[in-house]
Length: 287
Ligand SMILES: [Zn+2]
Image 1 (cartoon, rainbow, N blue to C red):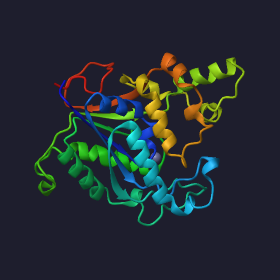
Image 2 (cartoon, rainbow, N blue to C red):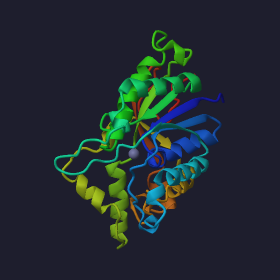
Image 3 (cartoon, rainbow, N blue to C red):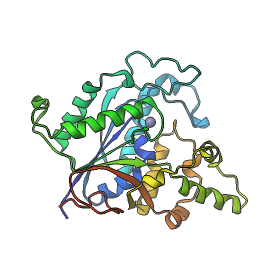
Image 4 (cartoon, rainbow, N blue to C red):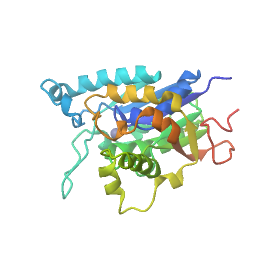
């Protein structure tokens, strides 16, 4: 089979491992080229793993997260590039404080779009993966990723746009990655309760209670990737400061996940090829 290319655009180091990671590992293992672009260095990430909350970590967050990312990339078998912007942090409080000076979310959109278009024209991806209009998770950097990805999707193939960035390249499909499927989480949650075990999914399911919608309703494409769940988990664990080993990501053993939910979920948001929904392959419809 011909080798195709996927470009996944993410906000922070660890996003690539928590949203569609096993899918990326699968396509890379099958001989396709997969490039992850991380827009920020994750400098303002909180330490979410109690075991990593120790001297020398917080002070060196940028260097620590670079090392973590290198391990995650190796676990997934993908290519990687940093865009070099600074994490905006997740603003908290009422009213919300202003975003910090010089952060990614405050960057001029066209500056970032130019970066992404430059990468698209060089790497020539057939498929783009990004976040939905809600950022998949309401972080200002995720919203920015959505905005710049959509603009770059339109402009990369336009010969009149920034010719100095290289020959036009028109990507064929653009997906939103949907990592937090309520139906899946409820299934795992109920299984743990039936077994009389504590469920790490409780806080998230509680937060969702008021909201009737499940993002599953938007999913067009489910990619089988259960063979790569270990690679995904290794990549998650590589982000040692960000991922609590007792948290929801590791709440259900891989072999149970394989049986109950062997896929990852995507929403085909834009396409320039014809395909029929539902799909089980990000390259469906591409010759
Ligand atoms: Zn993020």
